[in-house]
Image 1: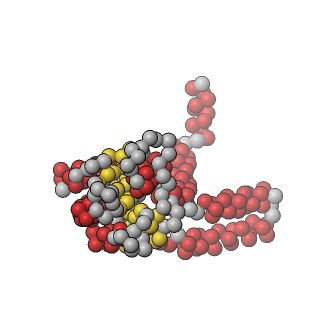
Image 2: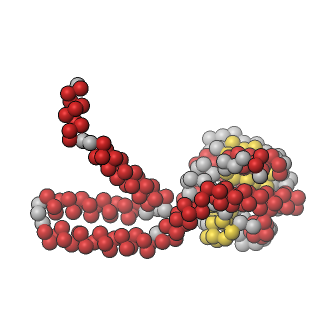
Image 3: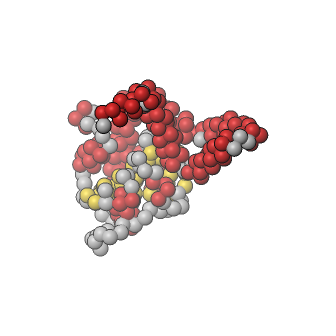
Amino acid sequence: MCKGLFWLRDFFSLRDFLDISLLSVIFYLFYSFLVRYRGIKLLTWVLFFIFLWLVASVLDLRAVSWFLGQIWSIFLFALVVIFQPELRRSLQSLGGGLFFQRYSRVKTIKRVIKAIAYMAEKQIGALIVFERSIPVVNLSEGCVKLDALVSPELLITIFYPLTPLHDGAAIIRGNRITYAACVLPLAQGVELDTKLGTRHRAAIGITQNSDALAVVVSEETGSISLAVGGKLYRNLTEEELKEILFKELGIDDQKE
Protein backbone atom coordinates (compact mmCIF):
# COMPACT_ATOMS: atom_id res chain seq x y z
CA MET A 1 0.00 0.00 0.00
CA CYS A 2 2.84 2.36 0.84
CA LYS A 3 4.38 1.71 -2.58
CA GLY A 4 1.08 2.62 -4.17
CA LEU A 5 1.02 5.91 -2.27
CA PHE A 6 4.58 6.73 -3.34
CA TRP A 7 3.64 5.91 -6.94
CA LEU A 8 0.65 8.26 -6.66
CA ARG A 9 2.88 10.99 -5.24
CA ASP A 10 5.09 10.83 -8.34
CA PHE A 11 2.13 11.76 -10.54
CA PHE A 12 0.15 13.93 -8.12
CA SER A 13 2.17 16.56 -6.26
CA LEU A 14 1.09 18.94 -3.51
CA ARG A 15 0.95 21.70 -6.11
CA ASP A 16 -1.47 19.63 -8.21
CA PHE A 17 -3.65 19.06 -5.14
CA LEU A 18 -3.68 22.79 -4.39
CA ASP A 19 -4.43 23.57 -8.03
CA ILE A 20 -7.43 21.22 -8.14
CA SER A 21 -8.69 22.35 -4.72
CA LEU A 22 -8.68 26.03 -5.70
CA LEU A 23 -10.37 25.24 -9.00
CA SER A 24 -13.07 23.28 -7.14
CA VAL A 25 -13.66 26.23 -4.80
CA ILE A 26 -13.98 28.60 -7.77
CA PHE A 27 -16.51 26.33 -9.49
CA TYR A 28 -18.46 25.95 -6.22
CA LEU A 29 -18.62 29.71 -5.64
CA PHE A 30 -19.67 30.28 -9.24
CA TYR A 31 -22.39 27.63 -8.95
CA SER A 32 -23.62 29.05 -5.61
CA PHE A 33 -23.74 32.56 -7.07
CA LEU A 34 -25.86 31.43 -10.04
CA VAL A 35 -28.22 29.39 -7.85
CA ARG A 36 -28.65 32.22 -5.34
CA TYR A 37 -29.51 34.72 -8.05
CA ARG A 38 -31.64 32.31 -10.07
CA GLY A 39 -29.06 31.81 -12.82
CA ILE A 40 -29.43 28.02 -12.94
CA LYS A 41 -30.68 28.14 -16.56
CA LEU A 42 -27.57 30.06 -17.53
CA LEU A 43 -25.45 27.44 -15.78
CA THR A 44 -27.18 24.71 -17.83
CA TRP A 45 -26.21 26.47 -21.05
CA VAL A 46 -22.63 26.89 -19.82
CA LEU A 47 -22.33 23.15 -19.14
CA PHE A 48 -23.86 22.41 -22.55
CA PHE A 49 -21.27 24.57 -24.36
CA ILE A 50 -18.46 23.00 -22.32
CA PHE A 51 -19.67 19.57 -23.44
CA LEU A 52 -19.75 20.69 -27.09
CA TRP A 53 -16.26 22.16 -26.78
CA LEU A 54 -14.90 18.88 -25.36
CA VAL A 55 -16.53 16.87 -28.16
CA ALA A 56 -15.17 19.25 -30.78
CA SER A 57 -11.67 19.02 -29.26
CA VAL A 58 -11.70 15.21 -29.19
CA LEU A 59 -12.94 14.99 -32.79
CA ASP A 60 -10.53 17.76 -33.88
CA LEU A 61 -13.33 19.92 -35.29
CA ARG A 62 -11.29 23.08 -35.69
CA ALA A 63 -14.01 25.41 -36.93
CA VAL A 64 -16.40 24.45 -34.13
CA SER A 65 -13.61 24.69 -31.53
CA TRP A 66 -12.67 28.16 -32.77
CA PHE A 67 -16.32 29.31 -32.71
CA LEU A 68 -16.91 28.04 -29.17
CA GLY A 69 -13.66 29.65 -28.07
CA GLN A 70 -14.96 33.02 -29.29
CA ILE A 71 -18.25 32.51 -27.45
CA TRP A 72 -16.46 32.40 -24.08
CA SER A 73 -15.43 36.05 -24.30
CA ILE A 74 -19.00 37.04 -25.23
CA PHE A 75 -20.35 34.90 -22.38
CA LEU A 76 -18.09 36.54 -19.79
CA PHE A 77 -19.15 40.00 -20.95
CA ALA A 78 -22.84 39.00 -20.84
CA LEU A 79 -22.40 37.53 -17.36
CA VAL A 80 -21.05 40.83 -16.03
CA VAL A 81 -23.89 42.79 -17.67
CA ILE A 82 -26.68 40.46 -16.53
CA PHE A 83 -25.50 40.12 -12.93
CA GLN A 84 -24.08 43.63 -12.55
CA PRO A 85 -26.35 44.61 -9.60
CA GLU A 86 -25.64 41.34 -7.76
CA LEU A 87 -21.88 41.60 -8.40
CA ARG A 88 -21.87 45.17 -7.13
CA ARG A 89 -23.68 44.17 -3.92
CA SER A 90 -21.27 41.26 -3.40
CA LEU A 91 -18.22 43.49 -3.86
CA GLN A 92 -19.68 46.14 -1.57
CA SER A 93 -20.33 43.46 1.04
CA LEU A 94 -16.73 42.25 0.83
CA GLY A 95 -15.27 45.75 0.79
CA GLY A 96 -17.40 46.98 3.66
CA GLY A 97 -15.65 44.79 6.18
CA LEU A 98 -17.08 42.87 9.11
CA PHE A 99 -17.14 45.91 11.40
CA PHE A 100 -19.29 47.98 9.04
CA GLN A 101 -21.60 45.05 8.30
CA ARG A 102 -22.09 44.47 12.02
CA TYR A 103 -22.65 48.19 12.66
CA SER A 104 -25.20 48.29 9.85
CA ARG A 105 -27.08 45.26 11.24
CA VAL A 106 -27.27 46.86 14.68
CA LYS A 107 -28.71 50.10 13.27
CA THR A 108 -31.19 48.14 11.15
CA ILE A 109 -32.45 46.09 14.11
CA LYS A 110 -32.88 49.20 16.27
CA ARG A 111 -34.83 50.94 13.50
CA VAL A 112 -37.10 47.92 13.06
CA ILE A 113 -37.72 47.69 16.81
CA LYS A 114 -38.58 51.39 16.92
CA ALA A 115 -41.17 50.84 14.19
CA ILE A 116 -42.46 47.68 15.90
CA ALA A 117 -42.90 49.53 19.20
CA TYR A 118 -44.94 52.26 17.53
CA MET A 119 -47.12 49.81 15.63
CA ALA A 120 -47.66 47.67 18.72
CA GLU A 121 -48.80 50.73 20.67
CA LYS A 122 -51.19 51.78 17.87
CA GLN A 123 -52.25 48.18 17.13
CA ILE A 124 -51.13 48.34 13.52
CA GLY A 125 -50.74 44.83 12.13
CA ALA A 126 -47.33 44.06 10.62
CA LEU A 127 -45.20 41.18 9.36
CA ILE A 128 -41.47 41.85 8.89
CA VAL A 129 -39.10 39.14 7.66
CA PHE A 130 -35.33 39.21 8.20
CA GLU A 131 -33.83 37.28 5.32
CA ARG A 132 -30.64 35.30 5.95
CA SER A 133 -28.98 32.84 3.54
CA ILE A 134 -32.13 31.61 1.72
CA PRO A 135 -33.85 34.17 -0.56
CA VAL A 136 -37.36 34.58 0.82
CA VAL A 137 -38.78 36.14 -2.34
CA ASN A 138 -38.35 32.79 -4.11
CA LEU A 139 -40.81 31.28 -1.62
CA SER A 140 -43.30 34.16 -1.81
CA GLU A 141 -45.92 35.51 -4.19
CA GLY A 142 -47.14 38.97 -5.19
CA CYS A 143 -44.07 40.81 -3.89
CA VAL A 144 -43.58 44.47 -4.79
CA LYS A 145 -39.93 45.43 -5.16
CA LEU A 146 -38.77 48.41 -3.07
CA ASP A 147 -35.00 48.26 -2.41
CA ALA A 148 -35.06 51.08 0.14
CA LEU A 149 -32.97 51.73 3.24
CA VAL A 150 -34.67 50.53 6.43
CA SER A 151 -36.24 53.33 8.45
CA PRO A 152 -38.98 53.35 11.11
CA GLU A 153 -41.00 55.86 9.11
CA LEU A 154 -40.99 53.74 5.95
CA LEU A 155 -41.96 50.55 7.80
CA ILE A 156 -44.84 52.32 9.56
CA THR A 157 -46.01 53.78 6.25
CA ILE A 158 -45.92 50.36 4.57
CA PHE A 159 -48.15 48.74 7.22
CA TYR A 160 -50.44 51.68 7.89
CA PRO A 161 -54.05 50.50 7.34
CA LEU A 162 -55.54 50.89 3.84
CA THR A 163 -52.19 51.67 2.17
CA PRO A 164 -51.51 49.55 -0.96
CA LEU A 165 -48.66 47.56 0.62
CA HIS A 166 -49.99 46.96 4.13
CA ASP A 167 -51.55 43.53 3.51
CA GLY A 168 -48.48 41.28 3.28
CA ALA A 169 -44.93 40.89 4.52
CA ALA A 170 -41.98 43.25 4.18
CA ILE A 171 -38.65 41.54 3.54
CA ILE A 172 -35.40 42.94 4.91
CA ARG A 173 -32.10 41.89 3.36
CA GLY A 174 -29.07 43.39 5.08
CA ASN A 175 -30.01 47.00 5.81
CA ARG A 176 -32.59 47.39 3.04
CA ILE A 177 -36.28 46.68 2.63
CA THR A 178 -36.15 44.71 -0.60
CA TYR A 179 -39.82 43.74 -1.03
CA ALA A 180 -43.24 44.47 0.46
CA ALA A 181 -46.77 43.04 0.17
CA CYS A 182 -45.35 39.51 -0.05
CA VAL A 183 -47.74 36.59 0.36
CA LEU A 184 -45.87 33.96 2.38
CA PRO A 185 -46.53 30.21 2.68
CA LEU A 186 -48.70 29.36 5.69
CA ALA A 187 -47.63 27.03 8.50
CA GLN A 188 -47.94 23.32 7.76
CA GLY A 189 -48.01 20.25 10.01
CA VAL A 190 -48.31 22.08 13.35
CA GLU A 191 -51.24 22.68 15.68
CA LEU A 192 -51.74 26.39 16.31
CA ASP A 193 -53.87 28.45 18.63
CA THR A 194 -57.15 29.23 16.88
CA LYS A 195 -56.72 32.86 17.95
CA LEU A 196 -53.68 33.23 15.70
CA GLY A 197 -54.33 35.10 12.46
CA THR A 198 -52.92 34.82 8.96
CA ARG A 199 -49.85 36.93 9.77
CA HIS A 200 -48.77 34.56 12.55
CA ARG A 201 -49.36 31.49 10.38
CA ALA A 202 -47.38 33.07 7.54
CA ALA A 203 -44.54 33.95 9.93
CA ILE A 204 -44.30 30.34 11.07
CA GLY A 205 -44.66 29.09 7.49
CA ILE A 206 -41.77 31.13 6.08
CA THR A 207 -39.49 30.05 8.93
CA GLN A 208 -40.42 26.42 8.25
CA ASN A 209 -39.26 26.82 4.66
CA SER A 210 -36.19 29.02 5.20
CA ASP A 211 -33.74 30.24 7.83
CA ALA A 212 -35.44 33.65 8.01
CA LEU A 213 -36.75 35.40 11.13
CA ALA A 214 -40.27 36.81 11.10
CA VAL A 215 -41.61 39.50 13.46
CA VAL A 216 -45.37 39.92 13.83
CA VAL A 217 -47.45 42.69 15.38
CA SER A 218 -51.02 41.63 16.16
CA GLU A 219 -53.68 43.95 14.77
CA GLU A 220 -56.16 42.82 17.45
CA THR A 221 -54.01 43.06 20.59
CA GLY A 222 -50.82 44.89 19.60
CA SER A 223 -48.75 42.00 20.97
CA ILE A 224 -45.32 41.25 19.46
CA SER A 225 -44.33 37.75 18.30
CA LEU A 226 -41.24 36.31 16.64
CA ALA A 227 -41.03 33.14 14.52
CA VAL A 228 -37.73 31.24 14.30
CA GLY A 229 -37.25 27.76 12.83
CA GLY A 230 -40.99 27.12 12.68
CA LYS A 231 -41.55 28.09 16.32
CA LEU A 232 -43.48 31.15 17.50
CA TYR A 233 -42.46 33.18 20.57
CA ARG A 234 -45.45 35.27 21.65
CA ASN A 235 -46.08 38.35 23.79
CA LEU A 236 -42.50 39.62 23.65
CA THR A 237 -41.35 42.92 25.09
CA GLU A 238 -39.16 45.27 23.04
CA GLU A 239 -36.12 44.19 25.05
CA GLU A 240 -36.87 40.49 24.59
CA LEU A 241 -37.33 40.99 20.85
CA LYS A 242 -34.04 42.88 20.62
CA GLU A 243 -32.22 40.17 22.57
CA ILE A 244 -33.48 37.35 20.34
CA LEU A 245 -32.82 39.25 17.11
CA PHE A 246 -29.28 40.13 18.18
CA LYS A 247 -28.61 36.53 19.16
CA GLU A 248 -30.06 35.01 15.98
CA LEU A 249 -28.25 37.51 13.74
CA GLY A 250 -24.92 36.94 15.49
CA ILE A 251 -24.58 40.23 17.38
CA ASP A 252 -23.39 40.49 20.97
CA ASP A 253 -25.79 42.99 22.50
CA GLN A 254 -23.56 43.43 25.53
CA LYS A 255 -21.16 45.40 23.37
CA GLU A 256 -23.73 47.76 21.90
